[in-house]
Length: 402
Image 1 (tube, rainbow, N blue to C red):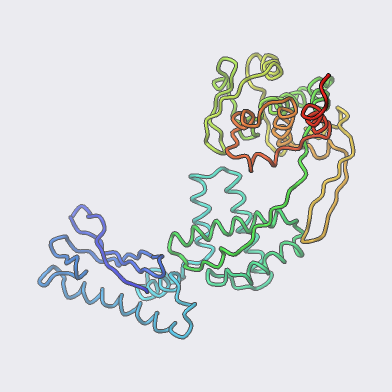
Image 2: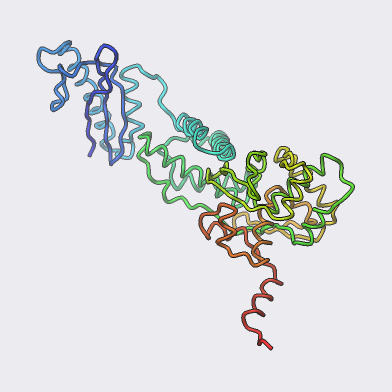
C-alpha cells in the first residue's frame, strides 16, 4: 500500500523549515523537496498542513494537495499495469509537474552516483570494476537496442546481457560473474536509495568457478631470489616481488610500504583493501631484502609494469615448466598452455607465500592472521597443495612408525 507524507526538514537561518514529501511503496520510499517553507508554530504535524491563519496557509496547502493529486493520477494511470508503478515513475511525475528536472533520473544517473560514492569507501580497483561494468552495460544497451531502465532489469536482461558478454565480447564465466555481481550490488544500492522497487535482480546467478592457482615452488622462488646479472630496474622489481613472496603482502600494500611501517622485526600497516591492521613477522629472507636496500622497502613500480617485468625475470630464471590453465565459456572448456613464467604476476607472490607456508607446516589460522584473510572459505582459493605434500601428510598420519 502506497502512502504520501509531508514533514519538516531542518530550519534555515530565518527559522523557516523546508517541507519534504515522502512516498512509501512496498517498503521502499523516496524523498522529494516541495520547495515550500513554513515554521514550527504554523505547522500542524498531525494533519501535515499549515495551520489555519498560518503564514501563506492557503497557498502552501493548495500546493501540498497538488502534490497529492499528481501522485494519485500517476497511480491511476498504472492501475491496469501495476508493474509500471515504481518509485522511479513517481519521482519522474513529481519532477515533471514541478519543472524541477525535465529529464528523469535514469538508471545511468544512479550508476554514476554509485561509482562516485565508491571513491569514498571503496578501493581504486573496486571503483574501476564498477566503471567497466557500467561501460559494458552501455555498450550492450546500444548494440542490442535494449532501452534499459530500472524496470527491465529482470531475467530477460540477465540472459541477454550474459549472452552478449559471452558471444559478442568473448568473456569467460568468472569474468561474466563479476559483472553480474556488480549489477546486483548496484541494484541493492538503488533500492535502498528509493530509485526503484524492482527486486527481480535477486534471482540473478553469479557464476563463480574454481580457477587454477599459479604459485612458485620453493625451488623456483629461490631461483628468482638468487638470480644474478639483472639490470638495476629488474633487480628492484625482483626484490619487491620476493618481499611479497616472503610476507604475503598484497601488491597495493607493497606499493604503500614505507620505512615507518617497519617496527622491530615486524611490518605494521593498515591494509589498503580491507582496512584491517596487519602485523607481519619478518623472516630471514625478508630481512635480507630490506638490508640490501639499507633497511628500506624496495621501490615498487606500477602493477602493469611489474606484471610484465616479473615474466621477463621468470624467463631469465628458467621458470619454464609447461602449465595448462583451464577456463570455461558457458559449457565450453578453454585451455591455454604456456611456459610457467608467462603466467606470473604480482599476485603470484601472495599465493606463493600462502602455499609454501602451508607446505612448511604453518597452521592455516596463523597464515590467515598474517595475510589478513577473515574466513577459511575465502582463504581456500589460494591453497593448492602439491602431490608431495599430500604424500608427506599421508605418510605422517598412517605409515607404521619403527
